[in-house]
Image (cartoon, rainbow, N blue to C red; front, side, top):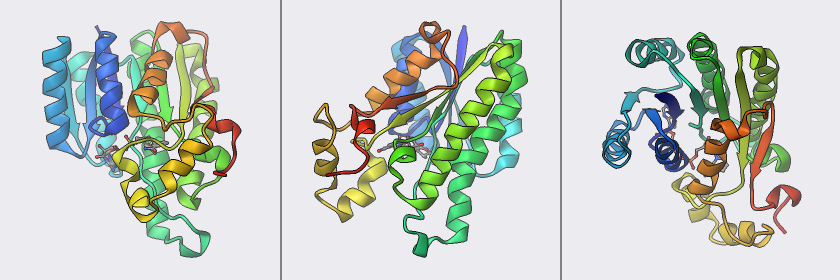
Length: 249
Ligand SMILES: NC(=O)c1ccc[n+]([C@@H]2O[C@H](COP(=O)([O-])OP(=O)(O)OC[C@H]3O[C@@H](n4cnc5c(N)ncnc54)[C@H](O)[C@@H]3O)[C@@H](O)[C@H]2O)c1
């Protein structure tokens, strides 16, 4: 049995990832504050894939809960083969509007929680013979969209590189995926505020469509698999080529 822990496991990308990893034979832990949707997804995964699927309902911003969660995973499953740091939030867009509480909240979820989770989980992964950590960053590290969000996701890529160097000898690979603008509820607020935005993103994307949560899940499942056995410290762009176009035209 292989086990994957997915933060934000009830959201668009997290749920697609959980389903894909389950279809690849992973049992899954869905760590999300949205307990209801997470429980419904866990039931669906148990039914459809015949693997174990459990929920850890918690607020990732409360760092004190992360160690005990990994402790429960260790007690129940005795191993951890894959950690997907997927939960994230946006905000703090323009420098003149940055609110320090919001800035701290973005960094807490997008950067601090992934770091603490890895710190807490590394012994369990080492004991499992190694594993794969996948951090969900964003194309914004290239395009520079939104002060707090871009800073947190750029930091997450820096964390990815540092961890890849430090954990390689433990057989733990650490990579990031960098999706572009997705067709998902995550963007509802900015799409509602700017009706032309989604179409603008499609137009400068060489593959001429928006990405989907399943597109991102496919890249994560690849990095989690033995097919990526010699890949670490990398950023896989899931952008339909939009990583080559720095700004919407
Ligand atoms: N949607 C996009 O366009 C896009 C593009 C690039 C990168 N990303 C990144 O992909 C990741 C997933 O995005 P998504 O589109 O699936 O978003 P989503 O809003 O659908 O899902 C996010 C999930 O994280 C959970 N979550 C958020 N804060 C939490 C907290 N403090 N504690 C516990 N759970 C928490 C939410 O409950 C939700 O289930 C994020 O890191 C996001 O930054 C998204």
